[in-house]
Length: 427
Image 1 (cartoon, rainbow, N blue to C red):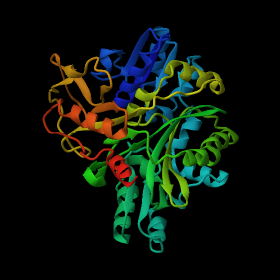
Image 2 (image 1 turned 120 degrees about the vertical axis):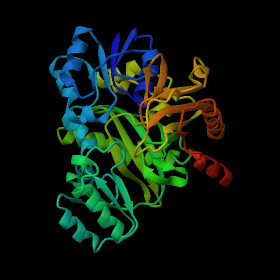
Image 3 (image 1 turned 90 degrees about the vertical axis):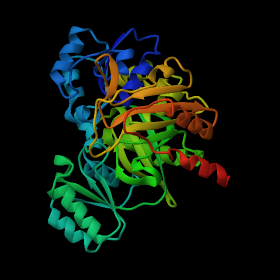
């Protein structure tokens, strides 16, 4: 079969890498792709929001399956366009992708169907938001309602910080139209865990757990980013937590969307926090996480093309997911200045050392070919994923591998998965 992957980041590189392992897949296209993806797929110079052109391409090339990696095209309705053309596509329709596209919608859904989450209020008027803050408890969490590249969340410790946050989101439009509406949420304390799940409209199959690191600097300091690294599995995601989430969060979310006339087919990403009072949902995403995908898929034994098709056909109940017992850690190598401003076009050294290296993979995020060499073209440049028999071993392997790569102004966090060592020390 021929497959088209839509996107250009580390997540899409991991998806192409996994699809290439499927005996069903004979040809992979990626639009627009990156330098790493170009080594395993044919990159197509089409943007992810060019729905009609992408559908035209899919039809002309007789593509059997299109996989949407990114949030913007999903929320924008790319799946609807493909389905109207009779093209097979993996991902939720526009009316289901709202689960990620509007935080206010998702919070209201959880409230209506009794899915555990933080207490909250929605605002579309900054004056009312500011008035609410006068009687609020701190810390408090402010969230831009729409898509903001994973950066539209502010944790405010004081009234003044919160007022500045309202101004930044709703008046200054730091996150653009995503800030036309805002959610204010109680601050919850606990370990954060991510669980990605395949959904076919009725049945849900959860993948192994992971944990992301959003802040740019060590010790969870600095600005929010798209993700500076991740590990899988989470030692804090126990069998008891899994059982609770399956009963009170996962299936109820799928059932709630169906009851609302928004049948969900694709990936639901559950961003969880494990509080003293039990797991709570922090956020939903309607697609694979980035960089969570880069540690989850290397541990997955299933033929991913088969799972994609089962989701589309409504036969996911016939699939059982299978993951290895080993662990994976991904460390993101970023451009100096990210996530604010950074320079591009620096050559990347050391990539040749990772060709066909078992148990260690370099997933490209912000790279391109220029004058015969691979250079930086984004804030997050590479995701270095390493396997190990334990999380501690995988972490050591990942950081050792980062030393073999270099580009001007390269930086990474040095504490990705530090919670692993803390957990091991307490046992």
